[in-house]
Length: 630
Image (cartoon, rainbow, N blue to C red; front, side, top):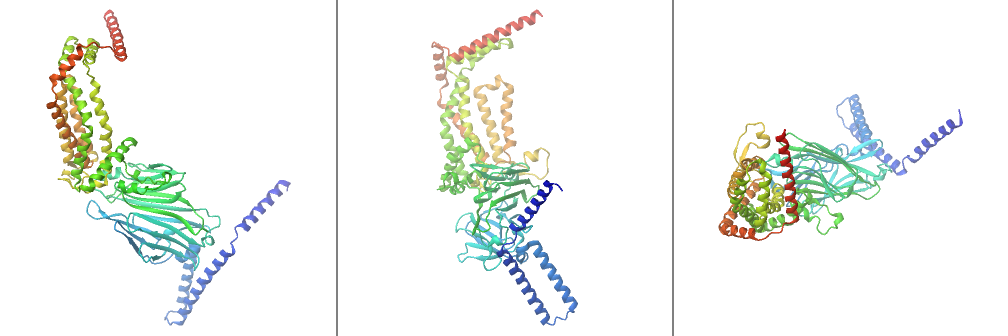
């Protein structure tokens, strides 16, 4: 045996000896194990003595077999659950905490929240709105000790309710001094449940090198709304990392592993959310979302994470559970008076569009909507007033757009003269140059009518994101629509029609139909006023096709959105007729003719444009000459 082999052998012996020395049980752990075994022995002796003192009429052999079976069962529990064996069996009972907003049910099996009911809301079929119950929601902590993995969901806790009925303690008491406790506190008002871990002596139960605690949370997301398509589209797992709030895919199965710290994880529905918020943070997370093809459930959510944990500390990790509606003012209230670095940013659970469009919603639309909601209970009237306010603000842009179209309309005869003077494709460049010169001399800009429309687009897109996400419209009726947050079907059918049913649905929404008809009417008014259809017949057909496409797009959308677009188009048509009555087109034409008489200095842009047109025209003539020679 050479020198290196001897040294390696001695090092192996040293490592094994060191490992045995450092991992030996502490005196406290030995005493606890001995105490636990003595307690079991006393209970077993008492049971045997009682059985022997009573004339059961059972043969001694049968009694001995029963005793052996009991011993075997107790040994199996001790082997599987080690120090947690006393809590592995028990009878399940429930305790309820409630306030005006929520009713929460807790189970001694797992010491966990098993049911959450929102008292102020109902499902689309008028049932109490249950976010989840014991059959579709579970969570627990994972202990690792003596080569075993212990799930708190498998243990039975002892409940204690405080005198004021606001705090519930779920405790695992190993003896008079050692315990593991989960304390839930529900305030007199609100949707935020406080959840704290308290403990003592856990360092004698768990390995001394324990530095983290595993936690998991699963939930099958219940269907709460009539319109399943949009409820699925607006449901996803959300989570906050740093200053950003991200989410998994809303339309397909998805999974994500995060290695950085996570502040909260939210299981989000279209209008309601369950959000687990760490007092400090989670050490990363693994999340998974699966779309479910059942009538009761939309998706299956799963999240696994770890937390910093010290068994010797009296206070373990702390959490908060938000269990409530995705109401913007409510979610924003949790960040009031909080430092910017510590803000939860729960309002980002509500999809209000991209950053710029979101600012329009949060800074303008929602404050107006909330203000009107304080004084008016009918949300159909509120949408009407909101539309009037928006149209009044946009009226200068609308007027400018109309004036641009009026200038183009009165110049139409001169444009037709230019078209007659330069007919055919070979004179297209001359025709275009003459037309541009006409517009320039008259002071008319064809693009000036497009700019006001483009400036209005951000508001239209912001409203497009606002209405499907507004819980204020949920189950609010107006005229024939019984729910402004869903479609307003006036005709439905049960038969599945390929292509039609998946995208259009098995119904026809009346507000969507009215919006389509109004849009076609508005398109006709515009085409007649500009004469665009005579110059570009293909474009005319396209302009009429767009409203029909909107019918298919918006048929499944919230009726409140279709109602808003319908009213907005009606107001625009009324504005158009008012402008037409108030604006004298003869005076507009006279003004343009005066502009044409004035000497015009060509701008650098127009000079470059004309030069480019001349060069292009010259190249076209050379090409035509070469073609003739061939």
